[in-house]
Amino acid sequence: MAADPGRGSWLRRPSSSVVGGGVGGAELLLMLAGAAVVLLLPRVFGDPLGVDPDGWRLTAYFAAVTGATLGIRQLRGSAPLAFAFLTLAFPFSAWLWLIGYAGPAGGLIGAPYGLARNAFAGGAQLVLALAMGLCFHYLTPAPRPNLRLWVKPTLFMVGLGVVGTAVFLLIGFALPAPLLGREGVPLLALSGSGGAALGIANATSAIAQEIQFRGVLMAALERQQSRAAAVVTQGLIFGIAHLAIQYEGPAYSFIPIVIALGWAWGWMTIKSRSLLPAMLVHVVADFYVLAVVVSGLYGG
Image (cartoon, rainbow, N blue to C red):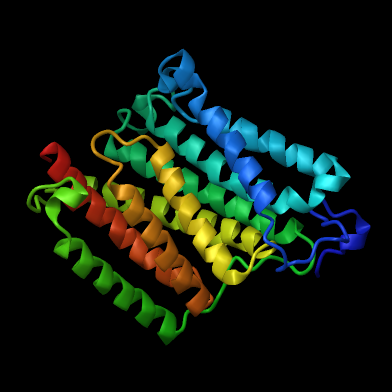
């Protein structure tokens, strides 16, 4: 049964808001500007990772913004977008905490940054992203946002995912090695429990990101922007989010590629009306980055 926006739903939009109309660029830029300040301000005083190695300050910021948009009637139309950003930040912060030294004891899950720990953290990230996506879907009033998650698979979806995977691999191996920061194609030699843990870690994290970006975020943007603008915007934010992770090594060359992938996966999601094709390509892409790019960077 659809939520009744006239009965005080927590994401009720003001009457002046038109779902699917207006660019809503000001509120988007303000939220992102605030996030940039939260992330970059510690650089003025020292190492930002020493201040908050797990990104909880970013989660706290978006939680505060979400609370403000819910508590102030004039801002309530921005609540879906604020909650979408919270859906990006909270599972990611939990993932960082779980794989690091501050997470659960190594004797229970495995050594910090080890494969077993990564698999556990990826699973937790997926559960949190899915739970927040469900809250976003069911607590937003009609017309409810389309997460494109619960869709019966079709032959077209599978075909789009397979073709997209093939195109990604062809382009990936055709790109000049220096552009990706790698030399050659040294593949990771993993088998047994290590291979299983790596598979779980990569698959769960990739699926979680599709729920977060092409699911929740794009659905929130579509309530304020045209569909094409929402695809472009979520792809840009997808790239910015990866830049904020602060990879070790020459990561900056990845960001334009990540943005382009975000656009491609957004288009696939719109075209198929489902997250499934993008999920498939994203899982393969994560394996490619780990086995081909990262191992080339660090001699794995």
